[in-house]
Length: 76
Image (cartoon, rainbow, N blue to C red; front, side, top):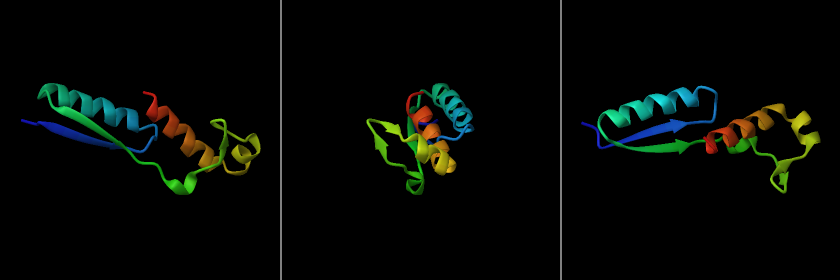
């Protein structure tokens, strides 16, 4: 019987499947679910008022994508 469960996600598209599976397992045993979000700090871009500059998005598409998936993971 589980009392707690830790799900580590990185904001990638597969993270949603990981969270769904972890939620199913935690419901079976009424376990507490903890979620750890990991984002590579090498992919950070400066923002102004919470928005990335369009020029930075074009210049650094990988960083822009990483920040997008991080924001999607944070609000689900």
